Length: 378
Image 1: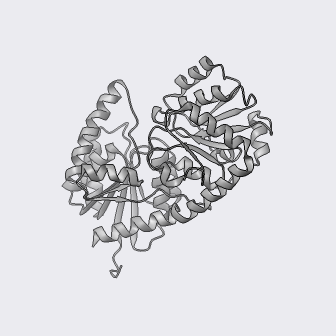
Image 2: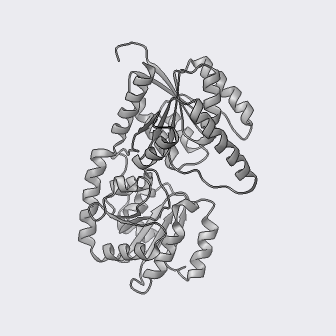
Image 3: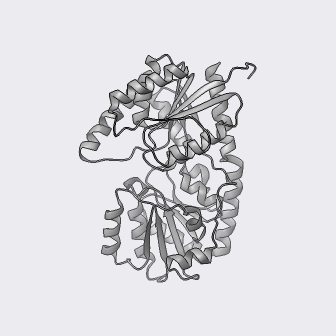
């Protein structure tokens, strides 16, 4: 830009989890901070991994604990920060933040409101479901009437929102990964030994929040189908979430207890994924999943559902295998095929990484977001 004044950008995100949205926000902010034409900061509603990472990057962080502040107090405090700092662009990342940020930003005179839609909202039950339904209703209203721009992470997602908003205010910017940061620190043999898995046993797995939309029950059913043909097969499920108990019960009912390992939340996710022969993503819906991009960066062959933005990353039989969602037999067949042809599977993984470098880098993502900010600020 020609002006000497930097654009003041503030990101608003809950930070109660460490999932795809949080990982993308941290990565995006780390790259935006390098842009001399931007002055970036963040408001986080929960102390945790995201707030700690942003502080370690010397990004100014306002921590507003939502456990001590109800929605009205959060709105008032966000509004005060936006006015005090004279924020020019407010960028929100989830539906609750869209509502609070949209109302606070518009009432405090923030010139531009931007939101990223990362994927489907997580389902809740009981009181939490009632609260979420109310926020979803308010989210639709604030999005339609208050926000200047929506960033969608896949073309499929963008098409859906273009219909809702009559083609206005939507742009597709794919998720990205920092390839230099994604690497395993331990050998495949060491990781397997620590998990009690033989070095020659076929190992497939997945990583992410254990929620219904990830379709993990279909992976477990596929495991049962593969049992007779591949009795030494092991399945690694990395992550935690509300579906864990249900999934563990399914494992017991299917009689595959000796094959499936639940790791829970782990800090060494890259080591675990790198030790796999196949990364499997049986999701029912997705944007551009971070775990998929990370597996590709680690050159692990992929079998995934052909949903959401996944076909924009994986080309069937060229950079991986795609199957229809909820089809455990097709999932099992694809896994067995690639496990039986290791050289071909590795060739697919190498091609996938070439695509990743060309289209899904963190630098490319940050450049496109920066260009969007400049257009909006102008």
